[in-house]
Image 1 (cartoon, rainbow, N blue to C red):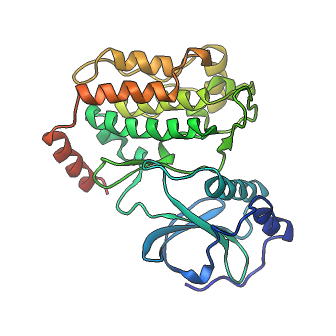
Image 2 (spheres, rainbow, N blue to C red; image 1 turned 90 degrees about the horizontal axis):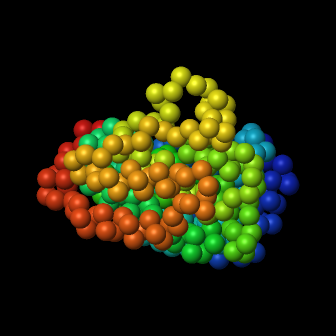
Length: 316
């Protein structure tokens, strides 16, 4: 695949990438990549499959003509994943960054999750298998706990940012374009960022927030996978009305009911995660402990594994 030779992005945007990076240790030359085919496209970026040093990779390239906001998010994502994030078994591996030869469009190289995809594509199947959900959400909690221990806040935890493999047994957290470092234990963030269905009330209202905003989003996602429904889809409200009600009236998605393989402690814990007051929410480390116990009490048996394999094949 040849590089485009059309208009280059403004000089300030090319320099912006290098301004936030003080090392070339993670730089990758465009000529090192064997780019194959387009596998995804967003409003400001295009993702290709490819190969880099015998690794199957995904290459996210900033589109020419992308908005200033998209360019800014890309710059910050590059800085975050190459300088802050580190490696974790349940966080997507990022190999490095570079600028495309010919037009200087920045790109980011990450592992290719072959055969898998965003967890929301498996939502209908997963809600019939709580034991499978517990295993996957333990992995997500583990990734969040790692981030929080390193003073990092994801800020946009939602189903499209959690990838699962083809067998539906491995989950990885992805998309760190709005993630930030929280340098001090007493520091607070105030910028409203995220996606409103999974956004904590303190974030919606523009109040200060911290790691507990991720815990709120975790609870909404956990509930979504167990119910098999998008948050608030049963409400005949506009996004603005829902966001307002979350802040002023404590509106929450329809809570999963206890039943087969769903003990009362599960909906209770979800309610704690999305408590209005962030101080009442558990920490991500506490979520890991609780889910470890849940997985121990409700292990994935042979039939669960077999069903997950069958579901992955029927939902490609």
